[in-house]
Amino acid sequence: MQLDVRDVSFAYGQRLALQGVSFTVQSGRLNALLGPNGAGKSTLMALFSRLYRLQQGDILLGELSIRRQPRQALRQLGVVFQQSTLDLDLSVRQNLAYHAALHGLSRRQAAPRIESELQRQGLLERQHEQVRQLNGGHRRRVEIARALLHEPKILLLDEPSVGLDQASRLALNQHIRLLCAERGLTVVWTTHLLDEIQAEDPVVVLHQGRILAENSAAELVHSS
Ligand code: ADP
Ligand code: ADP
Image (tube, rainbow, N blue to C red; front, side):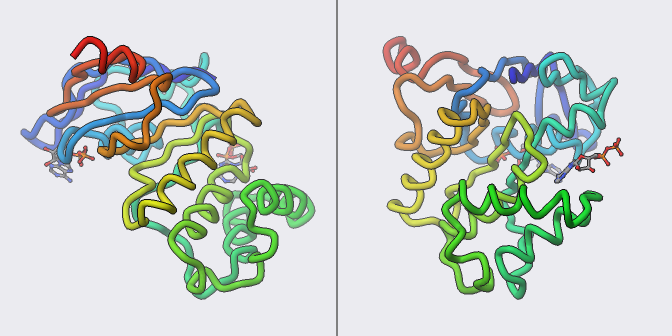
């Protein structure tokens, strides 16, 4: 599913965080949202997930407008925030079950989805371990499993690499690419690290609340 950002501006009081931002996220790919600290990446993520209300512009998920059809639009989205919200004392499976219950799934509905997500994220063997016992890379996978439980078409990852070592970072990046290829998932991956981006990836470069460039990574390097 394609995601279109159309002329979005956002201010915290007097402080402009996004200024007329427009770009298109490509379906079934890992799209990199690149930008230094303060660029506006987290603000955009908060608008995508409706944590903040749009002040100006609109965001379209396929045909669905976040402004006009917020509930339906939100159902197409899975989000992994920078700060983990997993319950460290619960097991992997319990975290997923809790989340499903929170979103109104009956146990009968939830069980097969939990099972298949555990499997897809390579977590079956760890499902009964406390999240506390997992390393950072595996915790991220639990968050991804949780974000995909309601089978959204688009997955947003806000700086998923923060706190991971180089090997886990790149393993996670590979894993996400596999999800795109196997499930046709559309991914927005925000980062400021270039080694997480491959030549053919669509890239959006955000700087001080504006789009600096939008192209494949290879083209961006070529034209700079
Ligand atoms: P990034 O995620 O790329 O680091 P942010 O979206 O967090 O960027 O920040 C964009 C701009 O908005 C920055 O200038 C930042 O200082 C400002 N900002 C972010 N959050 C707030 C807030 N809660 N109140 C005021 N200004 C904020
Ligand atoms: P509505 O009340 O308008 O039908 P909801 O936003 O309550 O829409 O969600 C409807 C269904 O979508 C839920 O019963 C659940 O199956 C699924 N769902 C939505 N968001 C999530 C989520 N983040 N995690 C798991 N399931 C979700």
